[in-house]
Amino acid sequence: MSTLTAPETAAGPSGPSQFSHRSGTRGTKNVIATGVMWAAFLVALVPLAWIMWVVLSKGWDVLASATWWQKDQSGALPPGFDHAVRGGRHAVVGTLLMATLTSVIAVPIAVLTAIYLVEYGRGRTARLVSFMVDILSGIPSIVAALFIFAVWVTTFGLKLVPACASLALAMLMIPVVTRSTEEMLKLVPNELREASYALGVPKWRTIVKVVLPTAFSGIVTGVLLGFARVAGETAPLLLLAAYSPYLNQNLFSGSMGALPTLINNQFLNIADPISADRVWGAAATLILLVLVINLLGRLVGRFAKVHR
Image (cartoon, rainbow, N blue to C red; front, side, top):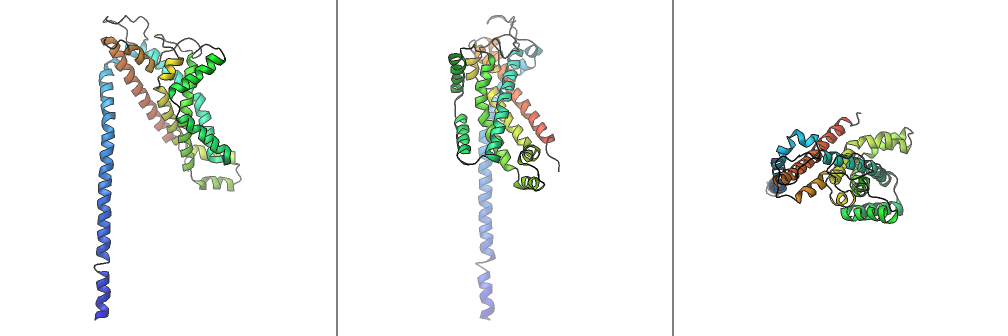
């Protein structure tokens, strides 16, 4: 009888009950970790929600005005007058033009760099390229602006134009897009590459037809992150692109207004109600612009997925 009860005793207190105890401990830890995660998320969400509420509540009246989207600051009265023109069209157009030129310069360089690092890069050269990308990601915006100023004005003796700001912004956008694209390319399963190679497809064609389309939505997201960063940068614009209250659509001539420089220009007269409205309106417009571009990018990435 002892031979029958011994296994039962061994399997009893030290078997299923011990397993249940450990399972319950893991469940408790999981609940605590989940609660801490959500608490941290809510804490991080509070300042974001507060900023969004303050900016949009103070700038919504300006955004709802057709004048803000149709006119620039030409004809605006000095601070203290009640009928000053509140147009921000010149700043919106200038921001989009400079950010678009920045993307045209930075995106091809960043994507090709990421392709090299993931698909071809080996040895000392790849480590050097990766190190330079890390260096670029840590460069302050004012340093990038000073570098472009030194090269453009001091070295070549050329006149500053709005495109100079795009060159400095490109230096800030390249590392962001490179790292995000690199991570997206790494997520593409190697089985897809191997299947393409097995069919006799060259490597460059595999990258163009298989790897890049598979990672397209992630690449678009990275480009949007870079676009969002350069759209709100101020230092390169203050140093390289003088603010103009008039609409200028030529990136290679004259001065050009942008939303960050409009905020800086009007902040000097923040005590005036009209100037304060322009500050909040420009800030709300910048937030709205980045939000719309991100939503469009999400839609593009969703409809551009590879169908098997």
